[in-house]
Image 1 (cartoon, rainbow, N blue to C red):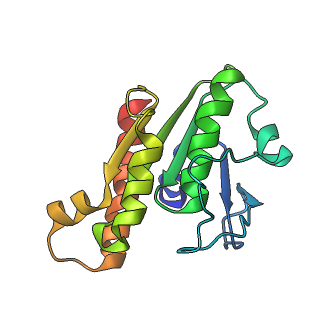
Image 2 (cartoon, helix red, strand yellow):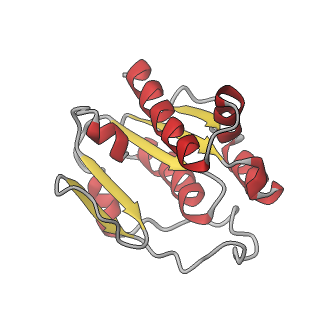
Length: 163
């Protein structure tokens, strides 16, 4: 999101994460501490519904296009995408989600979590995804920081091609 912001892509920006990050003043921050950390995901968490806090629900009151960016596999990104794919159509909001799947080295469980939760979303034109390992395959032997920078560029490329 910060990379897209730095490219001067015209939009309103909100970052939902934990802990607090040092963000430019134009990016709204909403702290969300799920209380869940890897690998201590609660039993059955993929099947449970995440109750969206009111301050997050209020973000989606205006009738406009929403672009959701998420890294899947962990609790927060995966749970939010699932919840928003259920919440936004009910509110009749236009949206698209651009998501990345975790690296293989992050473990099979994170990859399976991602694929299990998005199986139903993949058929939606609102859902676009890519595998972080595809960045490594394209770029070869680069540092993890360079890989994340390339992933930022991939999120931006997909966004520009989609709107």
